[in-house]
Image (cartoon, rainbow, N blue to C red; front, top):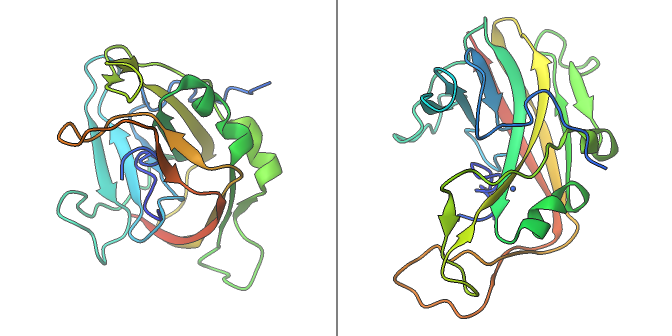
Length: 218
């Protein structure tokens, strides 16, 4: 499933010793004037998110990071040049143990090119080994529960990966993001209330996937 990241779960579920980064509470909370950019979205255009305040009253907005192919539900909006840029991914699902295992199962890599020197060194790159410490803790947002195959209603669990890149000057940026599942993801969430679910669903298979991406800072 290529487009699996709004839920990086979305990732996963819909169609996700730990070192806690600066935005460990994301996606339950966010920082205003920050662009959470989903490099591992799986296809163009990728999305970025922002919030307009602090929890519990903040509203989240999702935008397409580049104009070609932007759907109506994620309209195109360039990232404001004054925003802090955080590369982000998240998984959600049931049970908790599977989310807690994501730092060892879901391996992330990425490279960001330099638009002023395409043949030169990248502006940023990270290996899957270097990326592991940027996973946060597993959180269970209040009131976020879903029916499952095994129980009538069970707490949903979320784990996020965030890397605070900082600021970028105006321009169009591109790169390649790679993600690998070392083990299949088995979700026990009953997403379709009209369909009887008797056993857990295999959502994502093990394997490595490559996702070219681009985004605009303006």
